[in-house]
Length: 105
Length: 361
Length: 167
Image 1 (cartoon, rainbow over the protein chains, first blue to last red):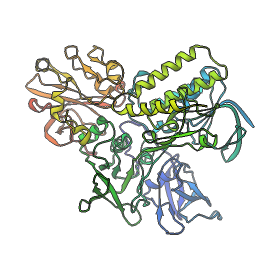
Image 2: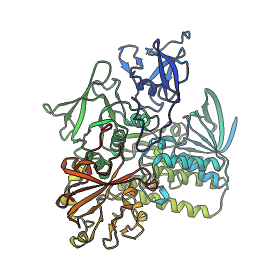
Image 3: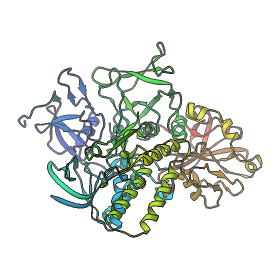
Image 4: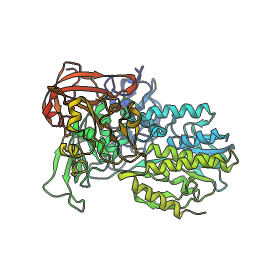
């Protein structure tokens, strides 16, 4: 969820909305935020399913170190959603297993 | 191949401190950071800092970050962002992945200010979405303006656990409580005081033993522990939360130091393995300096001053500055010593003294 | 001092009363005064610089600050400067007592609002009335809230139940 519009300490800028596609569904997201933040705000928190155990994974370190939050973005797997910023028209999919490089839908 | 007189790896408070002081003396400095923005973890620190005036006491961390970035830029420090140092080569050059391109940088002196990484603990369910480091929640809330959860259990009552709990409440989350495995609050009493008066429970001698939920955390199970930190059967309690945050310490990121052949020591109080260094932050490799959390996990204010020391020392070694640099270094060392006093600092001072005593090259 | 601070995370009122920084009865009678509840040796000294009257003495960096009660005028400038939010200003000189504390949440309480005063453990103590809210640029987003409480509860009360959004 988005932090309340007013924060007692930090002045957050109003963000422009961009349209992205997440697992086939269109979504309006706040431009300039990391993909993971935009997805959290849309109520999406499963980013990846593990190869062997098929168990869900999400954000863990938040600063691009641990690679737990990777997704497939524009056909490219293993994109660290906690640091890569969301952009207009991005096609974002839950990453299944280790991820394959596929066609852009 | 790119060339630099002084190459600084990591643009957090330590790296910025080093860059600023070296540039002030006239050295040509290249500062690398793997992120899109310099500042390291300063921009998620929205609380007022402790210390004295020279340590920006009473100023909020992100405001200090802005000041340091401006100072570095005014001094003409060259900053390479999206630049991850991936290797230290045998010939002394550094391999850097810069915007997906591998480049090589040769430098006369290298300052490692790589920081630390957050520790984790494992328990059944700890891989579920909703379990993450406290730093992740702090970054998302304070830098990106996004709360990672609404109802939160914090694991750990060091300053990170206490401060992040407070900051998440400021952003509008409910902190349901904090668990601490030892029988006392580990961080500053004043940080604990802020969240206690807001009505948040702190359960000492408790730990989290399970995270439950289908596709994400729906509840946490906590339990009291005995003197050996083992959960006591029958004391389990279920807390309804959607997020479990781990604030269980940090470990210095020493990989590059290791690759460069810097000798390491072990100091649990300072986070584990770390490179030996002397009071001018020189490692056992004569051309490599270390500063900030890589040289022992402490605070942002100590990191900044260690960085300044490293920057001054490296630039002086290259012939910049005059005898007054020694005086400046003495002042910085005295300041660092002052920051390592008192109930919380003494142990760190003891470790630092031991590391410096055993250092040689 | 009791172990309350390190075991429970807050200071017991008795520890505050027994501390050397607790003002004298005579000083309380003369008006508002600061109470510095900084009981651990933390390397920190902005409170000293915050006081234009020289009422806070701090040798070195780690020695705890000491209040010179006769120099303190109870202005509260030190409250927002303390990174630990450990300084309060209390007034026990009038029929109705008051407590001023730092407040860094939104929404802010408003003057005249009825609130629940709480103690250092966050437990409700009494009903209270907000008498002053100060928000100045100099205080860098730490606001000062003053609430009126019965004089005998001044030592207990250190905060209020936060204002819920949308109330």
